[in-house]
Amino acid sequence: MRRADREITDFDELIAVMRGCDVCRLALHDEPYPYILPLNFGLEADGGTVRLYFHGADTGTKYDLIARNPNASFEMDRGHGLILAVLRRSDIDATKGVVRNIVCLFGRTDCLLDPIDIKWLCAGR
Image 1 (cartoon, helix red, strand yellow):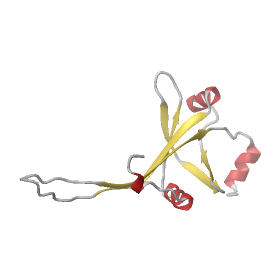
Image 2: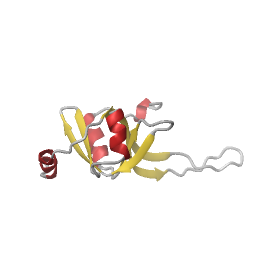
Image 3: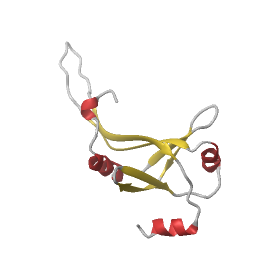
Image 4: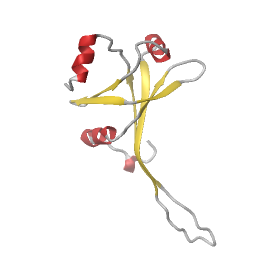
């Protein structure tokens, strides 16, 4: 991250930002370009570990790509806003700054297709 002064390093604060997001973008390895798709998600945080759960059909492109390479990147964001400021340099007026929270992660994917695992997730455990 270029602006270290804006980096969120506290795990609980990071999880709070993630819980405030509606959509997670999942990026998978494909050729010749990465395959990215927006997904609704569930989140489980435990002892410094984050697990993201995505809903979807049990077949399709994302499952084919995961079977070939389970490594993935994830991005989610919230709180978009523009800070307006008038800068007086000669005769130039300008807008300056953006407010938002962005979380970028990477990890390995796995598919839960067992009905017992799915029921466990749906029960909120």
